[in-house]
Image 1 (cartoon, rainbow, N blue to C red):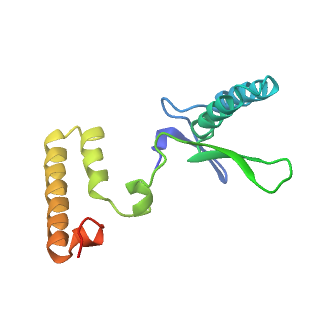
Image 2: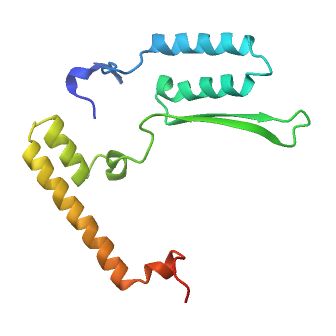
Image 3: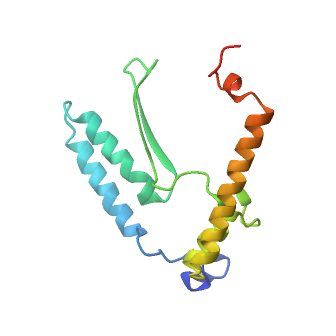
Length: 155
């Protein structure tokens, strides 16, 4: 959730100012221009590398998780190469999993460090999380024959 100082509100519309390191709308326009120029100067030899580089830039510039480009064969029956790019932090984050209503342990650890500057509490929670994870893995390995489930043993 954005800090109140990061947002400006007009009736019915909420705008968030970009944070440090985020690209602004101007950067997206510049990227679109760069991609257009690259496509106009596309040569057969460097086609794949150029397209992959352009697609890799799109997610971070647009704020989306991923972008892809699928080239279709001339007869329209097959996909030729598919180029994909994902944002640096495009994964299922605890904030997404909790829906913004549930505080997960990893979120509390991050808050203890980033907001409260309480490294002791963050490290203690980290150790608790590690011990709980190891306990769950140990208990599941005792209850289930993991070698057989994972294909490691012959029975």
